[in-house]
Length: 83
Length: 383
Image (cartoon, rainbow over all chains, first blue to last red; front, top):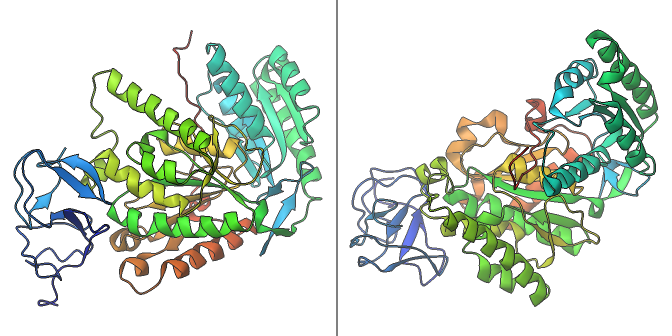
């Protein structure tokens, strides 16, 4: 393990978040090499790039919500920063 | 592709040959439960069915209960009423349905024990008639599936729902039918509905229902995060209802809607149907089963126990942790899909295999636990 990085799924090319699909929360990067900020549980989302407050959160190629604060690449995206 | 099922006079196929005990009003539930308890092949259809419903709600309850009484998974039904007048109405309703039935009013008995004895006597007679029925090979396209999801998480959107979708694509191509419901869980998936409807008018009908539900959710000033998405959806990582909807809609695969149904409304032709229902699974499944669905395909991310006593529920899950923690509640393990070890087609094969077994008589884990409820929605206050 260790060097592989976390398994993520990006559903659509336009998405600015990906879904984490493993339970390996101690890993600090994705398989693609994106550094992950903090622990993100199975099924939760990680920001693929910087997202500004008020910008859409894009998954499935469509807006699923709006950022309620600036979000760093690699940050957990959920109810604390998206509505 | 065939399964071993029961052919009914309506030409519908049954996957079970239950001895139904339908309690038409909550007042007769207990006597119904006691009477049914002596019959292992019985299926008790009971709920908090009240008196005093306003016209449209009363009509819906009557219609749904009649359709449940005539469901193809019932080989016969004992209809329990409280009063004599209601029993008379039920006798005339059932007279030309082709269903084997007995009707009794509890108030026509002389004591509780006497009511139970009368009910058991009816059940004995019906049971004898049932024993004449035998399974025979029937084409799988005779099956109408209720498509449901519960405990949705990110795995639902990439495993269980798309695998059900692939199975549904094949089933519809073979001439079969399926219903998907839970109007609130289409909010945000309108573009998918528009793209995957056989005619623009069908898309318009479905999207109108979605708009009405969305309007009602917004109108009362409450906010529904924590209700839908539910608390367990949020814990599992789903953040918004749109995100949840986009996963839920994967249950229809690449198929196109051929109709839009009201709660419990029966499809008149084969195809894929949308049914306008509340999102709570025991309620939405009741609507689809009342419409004639013989089996429920139930996608799970985190665990959800619900099902329906009348239509066997096949629990399908792709979340490896749920599969590990709830082995006694999952019929189809698709955790190999998320690990990339099997394809979506192979996942759909697993579902088909379980469907054939279930339709031919193998009980599901939901049946094993005796899990399931009947719920009919109400729009207006009771008197």
